[in-house]
Image 1 (cartoon, rainbow, N blue to C red):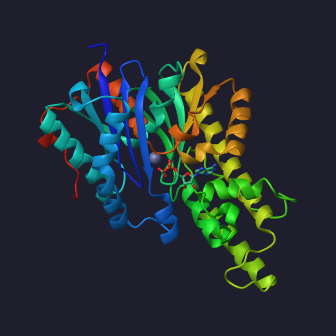
Image 2: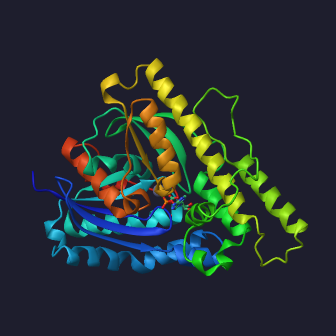
Image 3: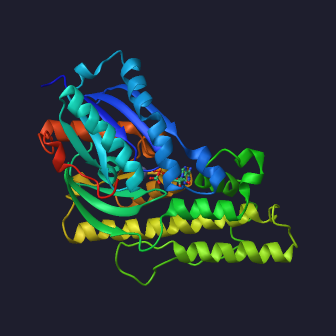
Amino acid sequence: SNNALILGIETSCDDTGCAIINNHGKILSETLYSQNLVHLRNGGIIPDVAQDLHRACIESIVAETLSKGCLTMDNISAIAVTLEPGLPLSLAVGMKYAKHLSRRYSKPMIPIHHMEAHALIARMQHDIKFPFLVLLISGGHCLLAVVQDVNKFKLLGESMDCAPGEIFDKIAREMKLRNLPEYSKISGGEAIELAASKANNPHMFQLSLPLTDYKDCNFSFNGLKTSVFYHIHRKEKEHNIVAHNLIPEINDLCAATLMTTTRHLIHRTQRAMEFCYLKNLIPENNKQLVISGGVACNNYIFNNLTALCNEFKYRIFRPPPRLCTDNGVMIAWNGVEKWRKKIDIVTKLDSLDIKSV
Ligand code: KG4
Ligand code: ZN
């Protein structure tokens, strides 16, 4: 029907998200509980802790989302929920609750792939036609793909080790940036962006560009993290710094980190554009790049990707920050996209299972 309402639930990592969207992509209600501060205090995500926090709020977040939209479960046409990828313990909470709702109110479920949802959300607000190129950069992922249809993705490359957001978070922690009040409540990636903007000499540290000799679209960030750690420790020794203080060159080192990460992202995205041209994966009149994931919030990275797109005559799209990071809206939207095409609408719940619960 044309006035379908899809409820979306996201619990793949450390954010509990819920949203209700109509068939036209209008958001009727959205709620997000972030566990970020708890995990910042613990120095990283502990899966059991994440699961407990999801469990503690899953029921109330759905109830709150319904009531903010002045809706009840009777109004809902289907429940979209993240199936994979993510932390199994976290995923299980959303899946279990979605199944419970599905049984209790006799509503079909729509399983969603978290990365596909990150890629498709840009289509909710912009007229982006298939096929398009997508760069997904977050704390858990880094990949380039051609989105050929709602459920058809061609992976061009991915990280061979860790994700860019992950190294930002680890570098910010190693630099002890959270000792500064200004940085105490923001993610590692935001901290590095802020510190980099205050740099006096962004060229003070030379960090080498990863994978320059590889003619593919893969990424690698581990070597970069190791070099930055090396500089942190070298400077700490040089200044005879005690453990809880910051080295004075911190801003310059953050700028170098951000610059090198950006150059690597640009280098690989340019390769993907060339590959798409050679293999005719994206028609000349349809050249569009979507960037999403938490790291896409970074304006330095976005501005440089925009310059690349101008050069290659691509149009660039970036969802607003709250839709780039993990959220329930993107899951509901992916549900809408599948609902419209009548794909993956599941009524036999036993076929939906997560490996470990
Ligand atoms: O997509 P997301 O919410 O969660 C997943 O990892 O799936 O992304 C969170 C990541 C964190 O690593 C955080 O440091 C990074 O995104 N991030 C940023 C910025 N804002 C968040 N990285 C760089 N610049 C930012 N402004
Ligand atoms: Zn994500």
